[in-house]
View 1 (cartoon, rainbow, N blue to C red):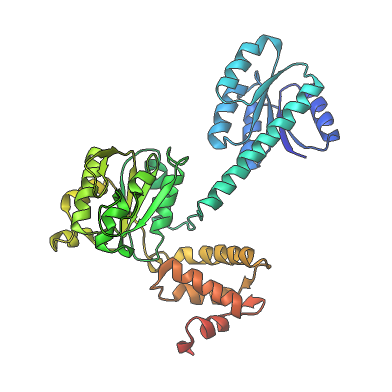
View 2 (cartoon, rainbow, N blue to C red; view 1 turned 135 degrees about the vertical axis):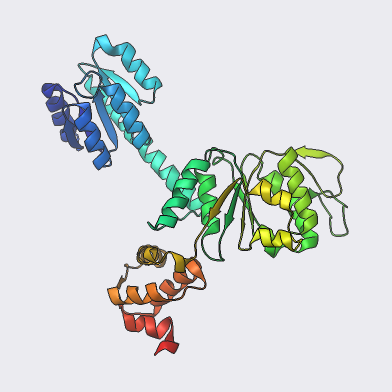
Length: 388
């Protein structure tokens, strides 16, 4: 069963198609012109749209273009008179799923609808699976700062501009990097992450650029570095402020020339990598202290995105709490717990030194330890008991 929108200015055509498809078990909405059809398309999620070409107010081609800009996942089948076949073919070139001549052949109509519905379901399922595979969470919040971040991601993602993300630990810098990759033209390749703070300085060059067998004592076989692994995709250098100066010099060369050299090798390797970096440090202060290269700072910071601390976006805390309650209930396979408004207010006023990461842990603790409804007493008892 599919939700289908029929857009046609001929009432007889709409009625006939509606009766046939309702009999087949589908749910049908009708619109008498493209303008009405687009309004319904914008207000409701459909599985398939059947759309005429020649209509008043907004024709089928204009509807197709606007609808695909709004939601390109929904297949749009063009219904055309014999005099409009060339136009219908042109519509297919512009993204229509298929076209059917008037009067429609019932068997072809049903087969086309079934194929279109299956395609839409596959597209949606693929996106869901891809999001799960990449472990991408939504960026939750409607504060001015978060809205600005989302807008910036939309603008820069389709480019290859390098991005430097700043913010405190636990504020969500990695999530911003993942969404830049997800919305980019490189999203069919992988995003490779390197935590520069977690890798000893003597190993960071091997980690990034790889090494040849015998390059050093423990190099018992050739190793492919993160730059090569990310070829065609995105390399996320987290906590880049902790990278050694020698590794910084090689990263700078890779950004300037698009080439790397494995440790112990003398042959250059071409790489096509978009670099997104993040840090919780003030890199200009690190430059003054001679811990970070100024030229690398300018290379990385083509686009700057600052992720605010949770204390600086308290208006988003209620939405984040609801999101985590739903997420945790799904992970635990249980019904979602409610939370008392007074408990939410108490959490909003809390000093979140650990930012989003701390809030998520606190919500999980409350879900585990509280009864069916999370109360303000639960917050005092399990979040900051010293306040009692």
